[in-house]
Image (cartoon, rainbow over all chains, first blue to last red; front, side):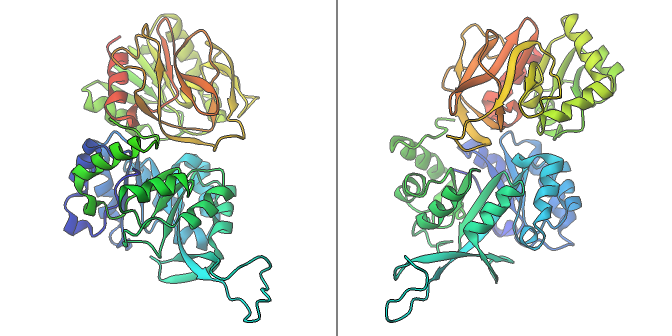
Length: 254
Length: 196
């Protein structure tokens, strides 16, 4: 289990308390995503990061709306171990290198929101994509919380992010996000085979088998459950013990 | 007082928070005189091996070496532990302390690098630093280079081959993993060190 993504901060409760509870329950990392990510909310975010980090002794990642080295520095100063960047990295890829240069690659996660795009094949079967078959897909990177297409190929972008100094890729399947229908193993495999850095799969995590699949078929190095509250705390422990029984190396018992 | 040596590489606040949690008096400092007077010294480190060259430029290296000679307990974390070896492939021109023999090297191509995440330890029962921590315990790693096994190795970890996860000799200690990020197991390591 990769950790905890806090959506709707206000509804979910106090992030600092939730993070401590999840850590206690066996989460291996905690990810705090500021989904509002407005400029005004920045000071509040740093305060939340500070309070959350104080009693948290497992890795702590913070993301959402970090646009510059200065903003990243403020979040690190508040106690984050890693930061996650998405839109800003695509708009200004050198930001990855800047942050990695100051804090090390291990501190920079590039988040990629990818959507499956069906290939258009000619009706006479004369595929212009060579070996492409009907049903084959490529994956495109989206920004701004999945609202805007970039036209960039997600796999190529992951490779570039690695070259520029990213330490991990947090890969979210937009198609599967929130569905519980299982991770997109094709997408995960395509990216994990293209890069040497660890790939965290996200989007679609549901039953135990979906996690087994993304580790065994998708080549994921970690999995993030975005809808952790659907599992509940007790279930996080159950999931980890079931995955261990299924032969997935797992920090369990903690 | 424990001196947490600040050489402007990486985030020291997480180690400080862990020590605060353990109710241990510690100060983040880059002042060689403060380091020389400390009861114990911790050298954390995240980042590039070459960053340790700052220790030479600021006189911190001398303060650390002198204290270590007098038997002041010393703990190197991550790159801080690697610095206790002779050198590292990451920055061949930057000399280490040579307290433990060998050169830190890159992970082989057969595994993903950096080595990020939780992994298990194979511990030496005789280790003072790892007292109460059984083999099979999980700790958190994040590193692209690794220290070789040698006589002072008290914990091994397997990732594309075995490497030194913890070393100790007299009052010198080093851990490749991050005790401040390794949950209860990591806090126990820090507590053991603070008790020396």
